[in-house]
Length: 540
Image: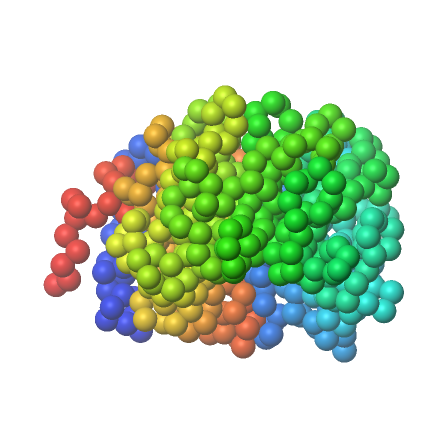
């Protein structure tokens, strides 16, 4: 563990303006400047690195697994070998507490009651939810590379249940694959590529959605058309294969046609899209053809009911950049729907939806990326008020292949009762370091997300920059160290980090790093959220 790095040396000339911002924020915090509200701070943070080649930080999920009132953080380490078992994968679980992480434990599939296997990549994806409604959050762990019944890369999901103290009950581990669930294991399906937890059946118990974006569908076979599996939670029991469902675009009632390469289920999220008090399922289809030739991307909403997802109920909406009210133009390889996340960005009674399109070309800039915001109203999510976020719009700094919108997470970072949005651009050439990556945080207001006062984070604020880090590859939010504090903390995965953290040995090539940026109350003049209009940025 490493806190508070000294960034005052070995800084490229192009980074001096950001370094000055860091210094000014540090001075203000250390001097006890008066506070008005919270912001994500540059001084209060934790860094933790993995072993060489392990890619720690590939996935993240927050939940209170031991029900002590503090959120905990699960971090995927999918490339770590288990002895001679190559790329078996691990997870590292950090237990939150008042003085920082109380514990950080590494778990393999074998150590939680399953089996470690070559190439399984256990920990590639993560989702937390209370699948038995006992007050402890539980953890679903994707191992999409797992061989099942001889099918290479068919994939599986392992669920471990939260409990007091030790975090999980090893006697209750569940293993899910397409042997016991609808469908059948196929080579390269990648069951567990994406995961989401939420109550789709309105019974107070969370359910689990498993994305299988490389599932082959139909007759004739549509390769990589994609599908999702829904596994329902049962009170005091946990997830049950009873009534589980396999849904794809050829499922009767969906009203769409499965085509090769569409990758239905590449992203999934659960939230109230209809505002009928029952959460709905949002499925990203970044390869959806939409209109004409080429993959452009779409998002599908499947309404929840008291009996779960019912494909016989008409889909609430299918959105793409060809839909009325959606900004921009559908172009080949936009990948609209690559990432999805619910939040309430304007503080009204209705949730909103963020949709990542990292392949978007802004003003002809290839794969610069974009994010769309659909705001909710009393009827449901409304495309007519789509907000179109790009790097050029936010800070007039746009580059090719940044892939802004690759990752998304919503959280109330400043404690004002409205969600804010963190947006990952892991291939951003930060300060000249190719694919170093960065994360942009845009804050919610009563009028929705506002670019004024946004924050941009990259590794220069916490340690040295490095080529190819992919800062922002994964994101999560939680209250890890003070559950009574008004703002949430932001967790950032940096899975390709090589350079040793200052004060630490190693890590080595692709060791990876997890970073948690803590919310801090600091002075309120706009500077702490990126507005430098009242401050000189001229270096002596």
